[in-house]
Amino acid sequence: MQSEPHESLFRGLLDITSKARRAAHEGDIDALILLTKEHDYVMDKLNRTGFSKDPDLLDLVKEVHDQVGGIIAEIRKRRDEIGRELRTFVERKRMAGAYAKNAWSATICSK
Figure (tube, rainbow, N blue to C red):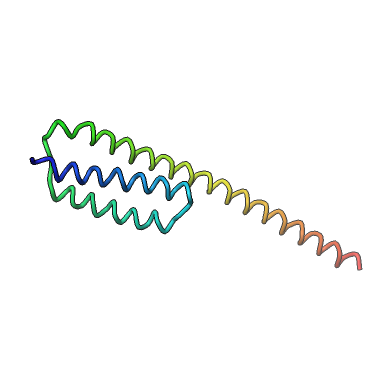
């Protein structure tokens, strides 16, 4: 059957996506990097295999597309949250530094 290699590769993508979702929830950056390499390998293999015109693969391809799109959205959301947290941290550190500098200056000037 012509679609067997395609089906196997698409199922591999589903597996990688499931693992990536777990790694993202756990904050495991090393696992995400490895999974990115696995994803690239499977995608390269899929591209070399060529297109399949098997209509029976349509549901599987849609599921893969939806799953990959979902994990990308989750990673972007987490990236944005981390960015906001970092900006808040930097601003608080800047304010604390300014306060400490003013407090130090006030101590020196009062002597």
